[in-house]
Image (tube, rainbow, N blue to C red; front, side, top):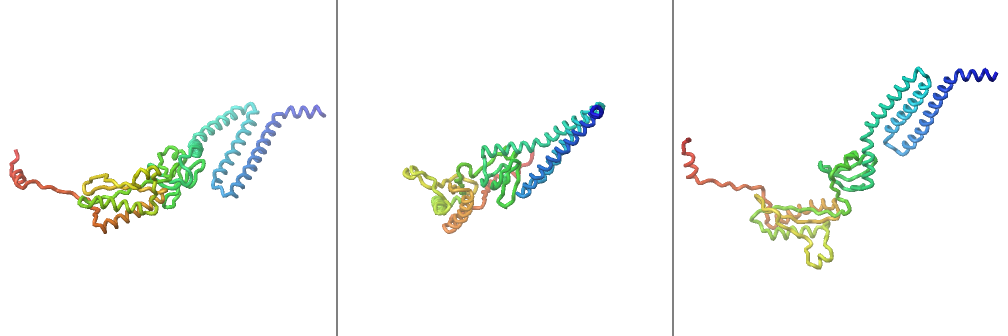
Length: 296
């Protein structure tokens, strides 16, 4: 009896091995799916927005497990070994294709890690980019950075793009901001009076700060400087260097100063001119003489 059973198993050994491999493959795939579904359930409870990606990964993992198991089972049969090799080769090609497809995503993840480590910007920082995009950093994830612009729109930028950008960070190490208050006056206006008005308006603004050290104050360095920076075609350009504690205060201060300086100029008779051009005419005698000449 025992010999008969032994002969039976020896005769169908290959069959039992294949069945064992298939059963193990199915059980492994189901176990992985069960564990993954628990992970998905916890992610859904937390409001994770990447559920679509997780679901795709679940199907991908199941496919890979079944593909490996079936290929191994087929390789047990001699005349089906070429088919198994073809499946494995196809899986290798598929893995290479997936690798190329995931290259950009992997680059974003690596860039996100370097951004978090080196901290060129952080959440709540105000940044400006070369293309004119400006806003406040709202979130930094592994794959992308979320920027809220000043129209309250969210702009999502891959971390690989952010890491290669030249950024202006208004909050990097020091939040103080200097604003150039540029005003043009006419050539017949009183420059000294205009400089005095600008200086008074800037110093009296509640958002303007004094950045002088105690040594600067003791040495008599003025709090504010107003200088002539340009003799233009139609105006004399004046500039004041006004400081505020951060970018929001600097923006409000600049807007207020432009308005208050304009009102003070109007009361004081100082003109902010329109663009002007001076046209010079030639001597009429020379014009007539040139007009009367006959062509050669």
